[in-house]
Amino acid sequence: MNFKKFLSSIGIGSLTVETVVERPNLNEGETLNGTIYITGGDTDQKIEYVELHVVKQIDEVRDDSDFQLIENVVAKQSLDFVSTLKSKGTLMQQFEIVPDERWIVENAKTKLLLRTIVHVDNGVDAMDEDEFTYSVSAM
Image (cartoon, rainbow, N blue to C red; front, side):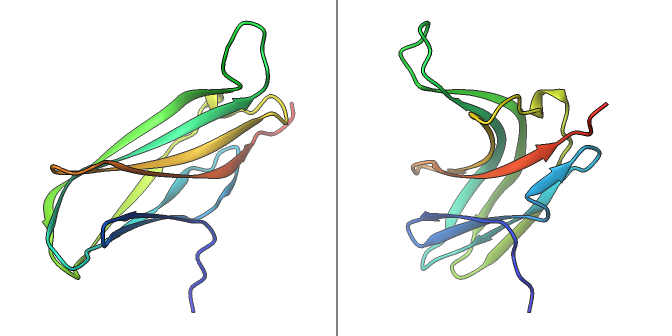
């Protein structure tokens, strides 16, 4: 049996998308990698592309902002599918995102998210996100 350590699911009608990350707790020198699984439902659907965003989210009250949550996209990856997912069919695509200094979390009010956005032809884009960690060695 294969256990999935990190899983996010998106449902689009009867189509489902699962993003599985190999290591949700990254250390300096490791990459964020995994596989996106798209499973078709009862009808054919055209998937245009899937976007992966690494988002740094800060949750704090600030005098200079009306918003408590502040988000910065620190990495993006677009995966082209441009194909029709047949009913009950499955597509899978591996991904790898290399971290950089923008991924460093400065305090406990900051977290990193992997946001998966699925763009469906003539449909409503779906989104899901999950938290992961990135640690750097002390100098």
